[in-house]
Image 1 (cartoon, rainbow, N blue to C red):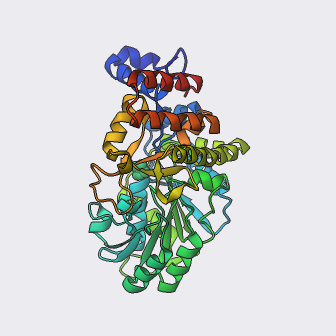
Image 2 (image 1 turned 90 degrees about the vertical axis):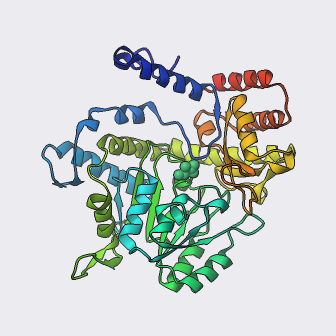
Image 3 (image 1 turned 60 degrees about the horizontal axis):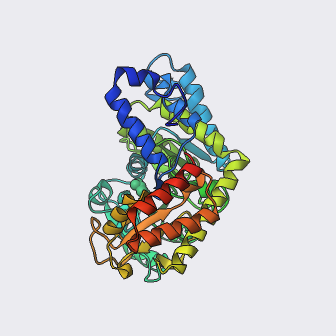
Length: 429
Ligand code: DSN
């Protein structure tokens, strides 16, 4: 059965069969392939119902109890509940506030930068080809164009080099240090980042988008004891709809942008940067869906889920290594890993295409010190959040490692495709 039961897209199928057909095709693709892209996940039907609800019809510029349009009493309750749950999930005290309106991770980071920095200020972030994110100061992104970005890398062993971060911070005196990654498989030591930030008088932003579900589950150290601002997207290991949360310390002050430059909390500065600085009306259906996902993340089952993501990633890495794959840094502590495909005689792009032909979905990725381009890099990035949501465990990771190996060895595409499909059917979305 495709999608959500007999009523699935009852109206859409009638009113716009073309789009309905495409949605069915994509749903089928998701059901019949193994998704190893570590930033993707599968949301619950409850999250999807909230996303598809009447809340999409409302405009609610402003914040709870301070809206510009009438008719927002219910929306206020929803946004306040989302905030309350976000703080509960990460066990935060009254010194933390949270903004739930940013539309996704990049606009959320942009809001943080616009709140804390002025154009031309220096920020220190992780270099994208070494595992960082575009918005952490990359030259092709606003973050590397509006601000002076200085980028740290990882050492040749694939681990973060905190000595290098310290050296660059002392040399460039950034106003903001960004800790967080999108292709780094090891624990990030937020305490070390905070020490460096304090020494040079920088704010510390932790972008925990990739690992926030692991933080909830207690399988990655929490950034909250150390950071001034913590941003997470809601759709990765946290398993919610697309969106973002910006947590900030409401007891830390900054000069406002007004002529008088009076001191305001960084929370207020971030709220103003989100609205009216960068966005108009929030997506209230998305806010409700985030609240639903946070409600799910509060349940004991989510902790089990987060732990299993890491167990599965470790099992996958071990099995792949046994089969001769070269995993960057020699393994993983979290939900993902990078594989250097060049010893197997292919680029990341070739590997991505071959794997897709048998129904295994990965993304090509640069590896540290890559000599190839981002468009045709040396590696692939794989992870386990989505497979774990489907209920797969260590046994299936061994099977999947075997599929990856057989595929890159050039075994029969038809046979492998059938085996992948059989596994997908055993663990339906
Ligand atoms: N595109 C996301 C990822 O794959 O990590 C980050 O924005």
